[in-house]
Length: 144
Image (cartoon, rainbow, N blue to C red; front, side):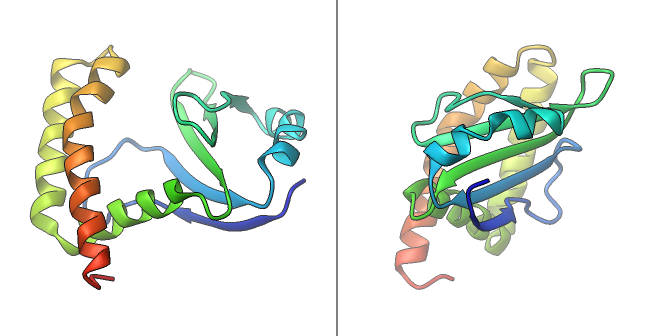
């Protein structure tokens, strides 16, 4: 399997979230990883390809009842998407008021769209874009 350069969590302590292990990894070569999909499938992961995000490989794993237990987002080392995800996480960790606003938004969307994951995800989009911009500016200003 392709060498993993980094693997980490995007969790924000104290932020209410689904009980899903959400992992972010960097690999040396996505093409090499693509050739190993059968190994991840053998571990119970569903191979989703880019799944709406160019340059990403997304894998998900469910329990026997069909509930999501794991998500793995993999990018090639040096992808700006890795920095974006980590900046978002770090910004929310450093700014609890924004983390709280995100928690409230997620709760509201979960109540409004309990069976519509697309509507739930779309409902977070504007907030995430705003936080991405703030996190990028914060990082550029030496916030981390």
